[in-house]
Image (cartoon, rainbow, N blue to C red; front, side):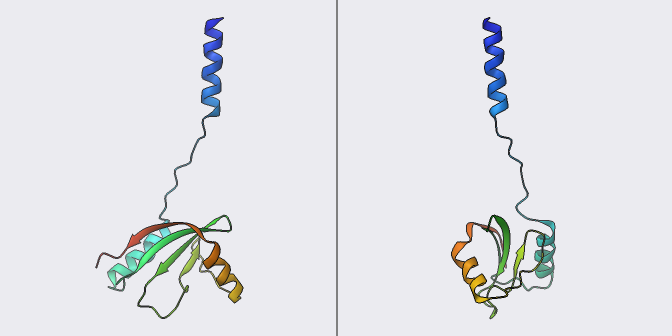
Length: 107
């Protein structure tokens, strides 16, 4: 009886463990963009940041030297976000969460 109880407890313990999938925070397409900017000496003050917006990952390349605001925002597949309305931009700015700075230029 004691062995059965022990087996049951072990089964419940292992069955209830959540399996977290390890995910690479830096997608390959983003690495390619960063490598290209590094090779061309275009990375001064550039940073790559990941956010969650509307339940999905979005990646933003930002440089304070650029005159274009939110021009380099990409979805998880690497497609550049095309802002159709000011309301979309405002929604992104207000409701993006889970900021993770993935890379900062080392120049």
